[in-house]
Image (tube, rainbow, N blue to C red; front, side, top):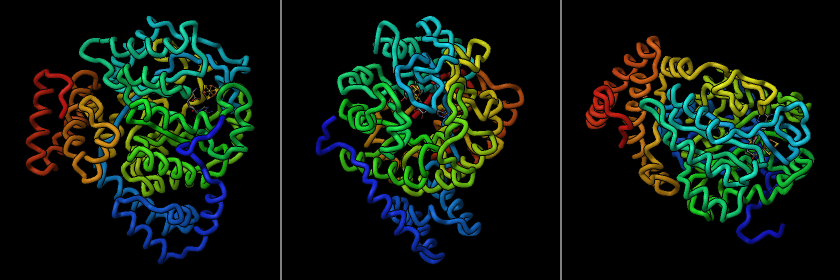
Length: 465
Ligand code: SAM
Ligand code: SF4
């Protein structure tokens, strides 16, 4: 593929030089970097490289504490919840780490019909979910790409009792600009695509066959999505394929490219760590495994690098790791997930799943845990429905004004969950939590939030500001 002037360029030489330059640090310099990060303007790559080299427990503790402070000052204590909806595991690519890869004969292939998708959605709605990310492999049944468009319509159309899905995010293979325009017209929230690895040689050997072999087609997908008018894009790295320090700096180069070109970076970053997958040796033995402590460092350093970008933590990780990373900068989490098409309505069939999960708890249990840890579980979908996307969202986020919306919306949607879906135990924990959270708000915001929570208690649904 030919490259145009505005294409993404990951400068591997510069990353190597930055990592070397970052080795020259001492405690004084590191503390200066941490103080600078509290200005919430992000950090230059050389400072990030210096933080990456820290292993002293005291200094590491200071990095984690600073990330926590940054997270709290921007996001408060809310955590947005979602679930993945896998509609198909058909795939023409041969990504060596993934169970869906074309040559994997151990996997049962399946593309859900629109009726089956509706049944899955009902199950998610009946658990209390309001946001999903729709996921497929890179091959579609007979209808081609229309299959995905129809699936989005099916999700939005499906209602069960008092609930419905209010935001559909999409994680599917890169599209052309024209196809992205069709996706945008279906009212999607975020389009997500993970580069997997930004290291070209590694990318080439782990993507053996199929369209995904084309590094440039994939790395430029967020640009095409934004050109097509999709304001919110999500990017990420599959950690374990190459050195995490390189990947994190490359991710930051990618973010800076989007900021330069579109005036706004990605809406979210995902940090999947490779998990075992059927029919994949490498998934069980990653070439560059990331330890738990390094994983926490990745989350904390990204929080300091791009304070306003959401960080997503999936159920690939165990409940314990998830709990630790909430404090370090995570703003969105999945819960009660299945990665096999049909997994919500049928008994889980592991031989159709994409990878193994680390957190198997149902949504209600995760919510109770999140609240007990002091975070507000939020099902808010207000921003994109009110057009607060892309640059408009960042313009509100940067002066801290977004918290005036997020706080009350989080409490109102949590109350809605408790009314309609909460178990008696979760209701008890949740009601006490909401009363306490309302009391903590400053008076103006408290009045607004109390009014919204009251409306929900009195039977109004989908209350947001
Ligand atoms: N097929 C599309 C693609 O590759 O872009 C979209 C969805 S793919 C099913 C979603 C993501 O799952 C991939 O981008 C990859 O990062 C992740 N994934 C694949 N295999 C994995 C594994 N063994 N462990 C953890 N994550 C994995
Ligand atoms: Fe297919 Fe995506 Fe899995 Fe690659 S990661 S094999 S493209 S589903």
